[in-house]
Length: 290
Image (cartoon, rainbow, N blue to C red; front, side, top):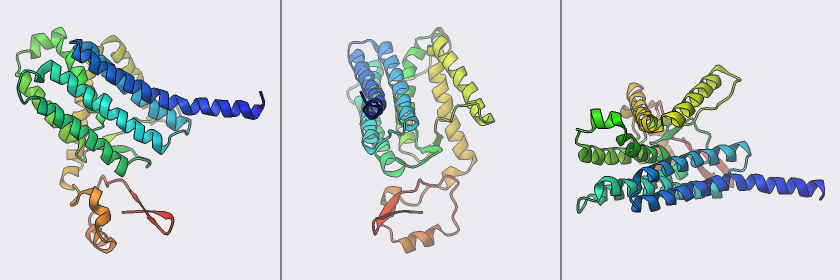
């Protein structure tokens, strides 16, 4: 085998790795649905968590190996609809919402919000360097729903929280998460981990702490951590005044507005969390819109 053939084979192997993680996310998402229909709800919940780990790894590996493609991004979004939209909805249906005639509509609303959030992400943010996601990421929402099930089985929950009206609270949680996914509340991306700077070292320490807690206290850790993450994003948005600076128009329709009117409307108005830049082609070159 020549050196060129060896490099070609290695390149193909590297390209396959991110797709393998994406396929793994789909596998565990579908397995979660199967286990939920069989009544194995806690097992179904953990399979959604594993799908989330797979989803996190496929993006990281693709960026590290520089094998991220438009096809991979689209496939990842389609898989996310199943693993973090349909699977958590089916889990919650068999856990709580199969007792009422129309309660399943809450599951439909959640799946619709997941699909809408991912479609909007592909239009607004895919392909751009970003430090924030606009709207709660679908894996975070799906993980929040899934990890409630094992958390509800802990002695702490049974002794201190079991008396609360959970059918109503879970319905409110489904609606709340659905609204957060289609909102423009900024949530941070996963920070870079390393030892070159203090921020990277802090991220590394936090990562190790999370891994330790996830391995030794999974039922107690995941749902409170997800709730804390959601609350932190909301509080940060309120404190920086983001909720008072929501876009005046749907960003998906900004391209229909004349440039002159958009520029005039934008003068004197500064957003702390501006919407991501989107490109428009003029004369064969890609220009960024304000």
